[in-house]
Image 1 (cartoon, rainbow, N blue to C red):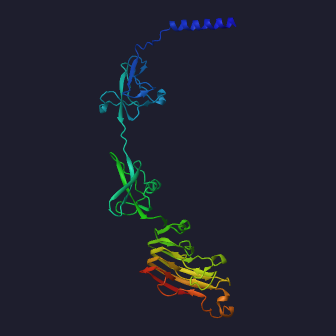
Image 2 (cartoon, rainbow, N blue to C red):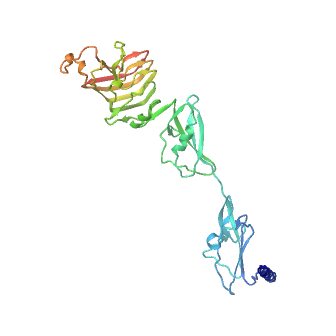
Image 3 (cartoon, rainbow, N blue to C red):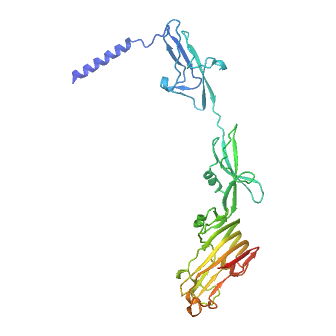
Length: 391
């Protein structure tokens, strides 16, 4: 063990002697010296000038290697600046830029100066605005950062628009109120540039209806039609809507059949109060309306197909809009409806014979022109029209 320790000490001593005898200076006499002045940058974590030597024969010329990761294993780093190149002139005259692909040095070497340009960070944004309904002045809700050449991001805009409490976003428009151009890109430019995008709102909690399937998630909300909706002959179920605002935005829903239930579970109390118990069937586009407002809408090519066969049904009420409206308002509503009598309970016919006339006091279809509901209580109608065709 002692012998091993002795050998190790002797080896260390020999290394120290060798190191002490070495000259740590390299002789570059006669070699061409290339000096790179970094001018504030870092290279391999140092800021001092970088010097390379090239051994050349008398009269020989050569290209030199640029300081970069490919050639020399590291990159120049200068946070907040863009590198513009190496120059022979420390004042960066235009004709003094060094071209590493073609320029050469001779035995005299060269000093090159790094040229840098401070990065100017522009604040490019899309700014979400709206026109205040009372003051008619532009209000700014917020903005998000963008880059030149990027389109407006709908989701980012919606998050900012949601900050306006008590209102529902309908759409984004330009300063003139026209539909936002989906192909528009941020122009960028000198300095900070904010592009105004205007949010169009409606006061209250609304479901914006753009397509038929949007009705499926409209329960519990006011309703606002964004555009005309062609139902394509399919059923439309609005029986869930009993209160709140249905704003048609002067649009129309057309080419549909009213969906309703005709089972035991769908029977309700007699709206006239003549029958005790749930033995009546109400059929209309909407449910029983209470404190509702329906306005600025057209229901066209609308069909109510009467198909009920339960003999326990004692009364059937049919109306284009609703069987009974209480404390409700109707304005600028137009209805073009067709009733189809596919099937009624046998008990509705004299002697239970479908070939005989209907009994009195059991079937109450609203067919009068411009009558929207079978019964109204404390409700108002203004500028409303309806026509019913019976097939």
